[in-house]
Amino acid sequence: MATVPALPAARVDDVIVGNAVPEAEQGLQFGRMISARALGVDVAGITINRYCASGLESIAMATAKIRSGMADCIIAGGTESMSLVPTAGWKTVPSYEIAKNDPDYYLSMGLTAEAVAKEFNISRAKWMSSQVRLLQRRGPFSCDRWSQQGLRHRVQR
Image: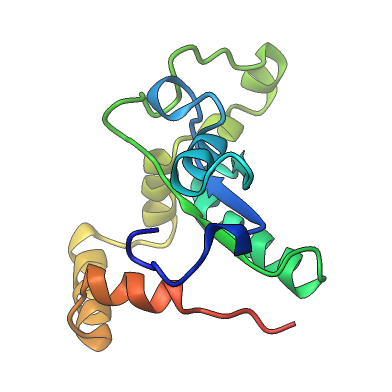
């Protein structure tokens, strides 16, 4: 809240935090911890898990709640620590039937990216040059500018 001091905590209806592996240091209802520590215990907080797009899904959910009239002000986003928690979590126990019959269901994003690159003949050099072009078109990136723009985004009902 330090970056938006004009927003009173009482105005926030909910905090929605996306997190793909909500365990260990980023577990135990991380969204609620964030809301309680940043806004006080009177503001709700929830953690959602959509794996590869949890932060994006939290924003989509916030937008839907605001547009439907279920809330007026929601703080939404994602958080992830790829160094503190292993990619698949601390105790991954896949379903035997799924692993046996449909093992591709358990492909990690890295293996998925490799499969897509192979299927569509996308070399590492080709991918990197496309990313460079994308960044050149977008212009210089500023975390401060992004956070200010993101915090000022308003959802129309």
